[in-house]
Amino acid sequence: MTARGENGVRRRLTYRAGGDLEIELSWFALTDVGRRREVNQDSYVTAPPVFAIADGMGGHSAGEIASAAVVRRLAELGGRDSVTEADIDETLSDAVDDIELDAGDTELGAGTTVSGLVLGTDAEPTWRVFNIGDSRVYQYFKGALSQITVDHSVVQHLIDTGAITEDEAEVHPHANVITRAVGFNEAPVPDYTSLALIPGQRILVCSDGLTKELTDIGIQHFLATETTAEAAAEALVHHALENAGRDNVTVIVIDVHAVGDVVDTGSIANSGIDTEDLDAEDIADAGTRTGPVILPGGPELHRPTA
Image: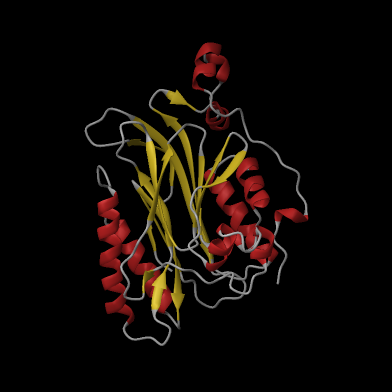
């Protein structure tokens, strides 16, 4: 496991080079080897403007080498005024060369998934989401959870073509087979998606060690009920391990507190600021989330274990 960067609480960042717009973020990353693995082949980077997770695969230590190579290269983009798709493409191509050099000849080859996001370069505040493989990016906003990335996997293809249902995909024998990766001497081909960067938004980046153990309802429950990025990350990992922990589990949770003068009122309440000192009109203009939505618990929060 390789970790680059650090966790942050209410950090003020400039949205893009040459602009006056500032955003305020908190983020927290957490990883665990799980209950059944001997080696943690997940790696992550939290080095604004880059946040990403890589989930390695391959024999022996090959997966760990591959994921480490990706986050090491992505971390080189940390601290930049802007990061473009071309920058990410070049970085991932360099990582493929590193993987080939560092892993050498292995029976199964060496590769990794990667999913993450960077602060965009558009005039309007935007995240630029990227992914290869089946690690995921989610958005939780105003009580709703949305999966932003689309898995590059055999079962996702079967779902897309109508060959199987999402319920059938959970128990499909090829559930762990991905169709796109970084490594294996192949040119990396990420998908890109633009996502509005808005106050009150909570972003989750995770490896499939989380989604193997928690349903979307479970993920939404813990993102909704925990008041900080740190608490949300800890709850997600804890419950994935409690359910079965069949794989390495890695998460990054990012909270958007403010974009320019627009502030999330839920974040104000959680910060301890006395809202009585604010004009009602100011709160109404700033508010994009009124607070956590508490969902019922129960067995549907967890996936059935194999």
